[in-house]
Image (cartoon, rainbow, N blue to C red; front, side):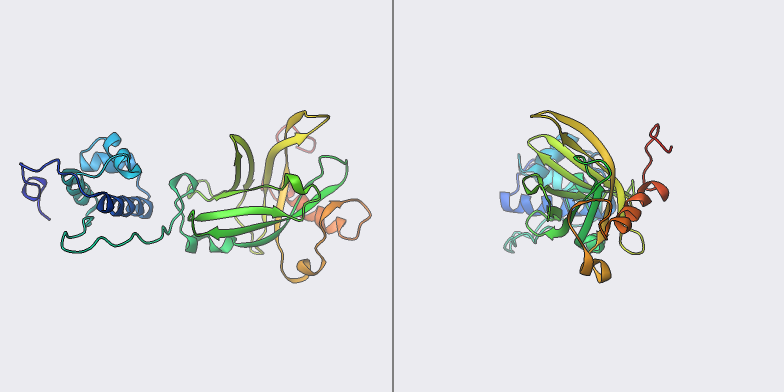
Length: 267
């Protein structure tokens, strides 16, 4: 591979590349970072450029220069430039989620796609459970898993958002961000039956307009087989036919160690 000095003539070190080519290079760099689980800072250090220069080029705030591109090619060990004689192809659809949601590909998280019976304790009635549907699917336009809730007794409060699957923690996060207000379900990896167990943190609507932070166990169970035939939604009260089975599922959050509640009764 040619050295930086040989590849980049001294009289054109800061030649700016066309916008279309800069976008193609930015996509290629982001994909290389995701595949290698490499941070932007690490790449900037390896390429001997500032992190500010790299961030501005990747975000489109400034075009790539010839010098910067050659340094990145050497650091990554792969070509990034399209020959000038060839037309710049339209960038392919992004195949991985943004870095802030785990940089996963659709193939890596396809096992999560589907419809789930979702169970949690009822905030409004002691001893009751709350059951609704959560649908998880790949959104092509934003290149990430998204979720939405349905079959909720309180339909106006149905949530939707992004699914985050970071590689390091081993957890799965259903994240709702509405004008800076967050709601989060933190779930363990699926069981062999595809069930997801964890904790929901949200706001409980109390008296009047008062909102109170609340946390509760949550279970997502795939809607298939016998469960799909008999799934029931809404407020599940003691005495209903489905209540014992639903409660056993929700109790597994604590009993099987999917989440802990230090200082609470039973701990």
